[in-house]
Each structure stands twice: as structure tokens, then as C-alpha cells.
Length: 171
Image 1 (cartoon, rainbow, N blue to C red):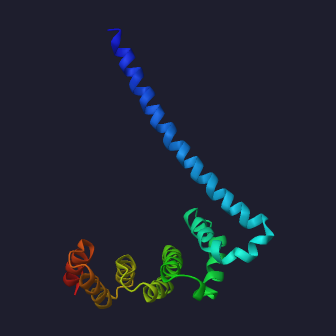
Image 2: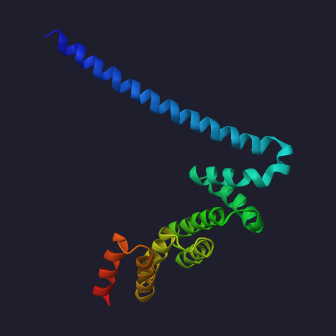
Image 3: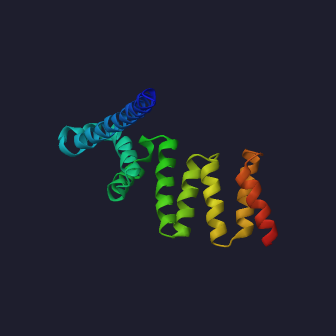
């Protein structure tokens, strides 16, 4: 009977140790992100290095859902497209499209996903989102074409296969 509480307490101590490790790692990541943001806001010499750090700062703002700041930096990045990779530009267009879709501006969301696809044409995620938004707009034939394009890139894509079946039933 005496060993049961010891085993129980040992399990609790192990659980709390893992929990503290996870929380500590998250705290370190948050601290690192805060330091990057602090540098951007307080250091005036950063203007010379703005191009090299503007994208990582923008990613942090998008992750934290600080949309006003993310949109401001994204706008600056998109004005200087030649300084960034296609993947970085596609990320920004995708995030803007997600924001438009959240507020039910479907046409603007689709336009931004298409801009993202112009930078990374084989993005199955962007193609899927365009197809889903076209379905929401009840443009089933365009959605079907988009899902078929997904299948040319990934013939086993479950989402595309399922949605094509649904659309065929509707048509």
C-alpha cells in the first residue's frame, strides 16, 4: 500500500517535468520573436538592413495575428518584389488571401491566391483553397477544373477526389 502513492507521485513529477520543458521552450521562442520585433521598432540603423529582416518580421506578425502590422510590412515587401523569393511572395499573397476569405471577400481572396499561384504554380494548398472558394461562390465548373489541376499534380489527393465526387453529384 505504501508504494502506490510513491508511484503516483513519480508519475505526476514526470508529467510536470515534461510540461515545464514544453513551456520553457515556448517561452524561449516567444522571447526570441519579441527581441526581433523590438529591434525593428527601436533601432534606427535597421533601415539599412530592412530588406533582410522585413520578411521574418512579417512572418511573426502573421503568426501572432497582428494583422495591421503584417499588412503594412507585406505592402512594403510587395512594392519591392524583386528583393524577395517567389516562395516568400507567395506566402504573403496566401496570408492576405486567407484574411480576405475570413471576412468573406471571396473574389479578393481568389485573386490573391492566384497571385500566390503565379509565384508558386505547383502549390496544392493554394489550388485547393481556390477550388474551395469557388465552391462557396457556387462556381462548380471552375472548382471542378481546379480540382482536376490538383489531380494532375498529385493524382492521389484525397480532398480533390472527394470534392470532385461531390461536385459531380451537384451538376
